[in-house]
Image (cartoon, rainbow, N blue to C red; front, side, top):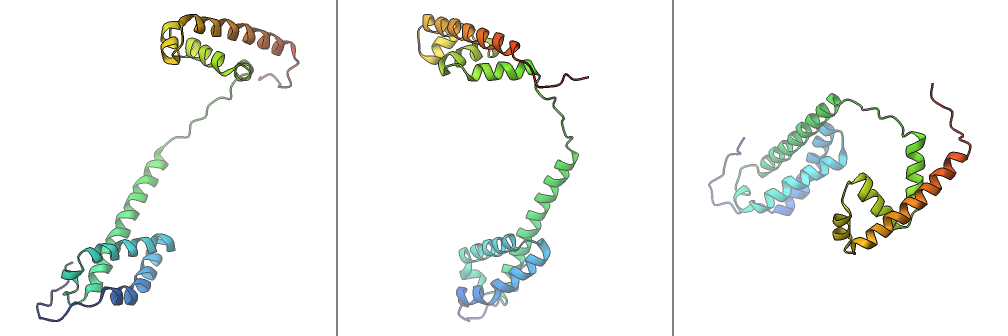
Length: 176
């Protein structure tokens, strides 16, 4: 809907007066439509920002507030459609149930956390990331011998920690 233009020589209405006269009532209308006062205020504010950029021409309309109202309602409707589409998408998603990590995984994670950062990084990159010693050396900007040393020390520390962890009594009941 395009408001009728008043082609007469009447001077443009004051933007601040239009804002003061219509911001509150437009906000109340959109709040009733959207059910969210902050969002309604944002939409009306955005509409007035768009009006300000074109005020010279819009001020000559018979009812500049009608243009602001149309823009604010269009913004609200577009936002409502986006939210509805997002909600419909979320409703179609299935909830995934992932099994809890087993005791071995928990023990390994705990053991890795106990290693110095360089040894932990080398072990993870080598065993989990499947990088070669040369690739790890390049990434870490160290000599290949340094990576071998980190891996040797990391394996020894992991073996000691995991052997010790197996000796400790588990407080977790086995699954049926």
